[in-house]
Amino acid sequence: MNITPWPSELAERYRAAGYWRGQSFSAALREWASRHGPRTAVVDGNLRRSYQDLDVRASRFASGFAVRGIRPGDRVVVQLPNTADFFDIVFGLLRLGAVPVFALPAHRESELGYFCRHSEAVAIVLPGTHDGFDHRTLIPAVRAAAPTVRHTFQVGEDLGVPPEPLPDPDPGALAFLQLSGGSTGLPKLIPRTADDYLYSVRESAEICGLSTATVYLCVLPVAHNFTLSSPGVLGVLHAGGTVVMCPRPNPDTAFPLIERERVTITALVPPLALIWLTAAETGGYDLSSLQVLQVGGAKLTADVARRIGPTLGAAVQQVFGMAEGLVNYTRLDDPAELVEQTQGRPISPADEILIVDDEDVPVTPGATGHLLTRGPYTIRGYFRADEHNAVAFTSDGFYRTGDLVRQTPEGYLVVTGRAKDQINRGGEKIAAEEIENHLLAHPAVHDAAVVAVADPYLGERTCAFVTLRAGVEGPTANQLRSFIRSRGLAAYKVPDRVRIVPAFPVTGVGKISRTDLRAALRAHLAQEG
Ligand code: OOB
Image 1 (cartoon, helix red, strand yellow):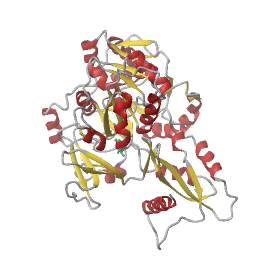
Image 2 (tube, protein in one colour):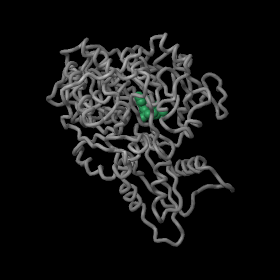
Image 3 (cartoon, rainbow, N blue to C red):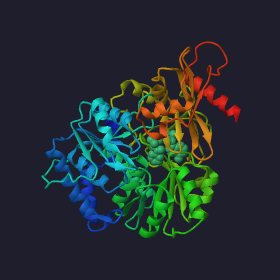
């Protein structure tokens, strides 16, 4: 089974309420093209593609993948930078009924090999050289890790062929796999269906006031859930607006695009919002078209939220979402207090929110607790992860987000912390255990614990505590960082600091859990100031 189904009675209710429309991505694209045909859908440098173009190219790419032996249901790992190619490849695969697995451009052989192996992918689509790195060099390692991979395709290759008619994919079936931030050793794959995903896309577009006048700058990696669907590029296409692809997130790249294309809305993580604020203060570009700045992925402080309006001339919208489903938005007409001090409220009246204590008992209203959720676009289980699903979901199907929140009397959520062993490095998620396992692979390392350190700019950075084996020539902290880098993983996962200690600074006796160990080390760091 590729997806954990919703209970049939609930599924019926979601259909009856019009949340699930029984429309595939392929059919959605066809509908958008018939409604908005000649309008500009995507801008990438000097390239402009109409809705009609996207639809025609999706059919050509779908058939192109088919003649190369990709079949409906086959998984294809895609690593796509922010270019117009994204739409050809992803809509091509979706039209065929093949299943994209959305890797991020920062991923390297360690992650890509794992995604291919775990999803039993038959193909991988990689960029050539992107941001100074030649992704083709990853191919041998990926193939060695995942013998199912029969084809490698390069972004920018014209894979299109004259289209053949194809059967419409099942809107209730697995459409694609997103990545979880993860808190255990290996990232989990998140199975999404057209039914559930397109519901969140339509509602998000509505909540964010998108229309044919919308011009969205795609700054964060396009395959991330925020950029793809909250409301993201799919929300914009649903509304008939224009997506402008931004190849790099820095102001020097983004600001001229905002000025030239008269961008109305964009989405950033908090550290980027800070960089943009600083750059905007020095002026130089006309950013007056910008109406909404969405900020999400990590906690935005009220102070920064307050600076956005006056400096960028845009309304701020907080977005607290997760690739597993649930997305919360502050609304565009909310009072300043809610917009600055909360992370919004859910998309749907059918989103169920539970805030519970350590024993899964609901806390008193307004108190802080663990956020659990289920609803019409929140998954019921990760892809092929039975053991993990048993702990990540309650027996009645609530997803344990790992976030600590409280709810205001208005029903808005305030994120106050996190119970999961994850570092949120400016929106980029790092599972402590994944990095610990890489450190433990070093022959001189006896034990390792990775924790978050507060950081004024990124919110959090990573610190790895390491003890070495007795009697071996020990590596230095820098050598350990190089070792991690040599393991072939995304650069943002390399620990910002490595501290070699004689023993873990844990008081008390007896065996302690890794969670407790990490907590003790965090406390130790906090004490040092
Ligand atoms: C988004 O999705 P993911 O899957 O990369 O990460 C989800 C996690 C949440 O569980 C939470 O821990 C954290 O990221 N998070 C926030 C936040 N938004 C996400 N923590 C505090 N404040 C926020 N505003 O990050 C994501 C997906 C869709 C839309 C927006 C973000």
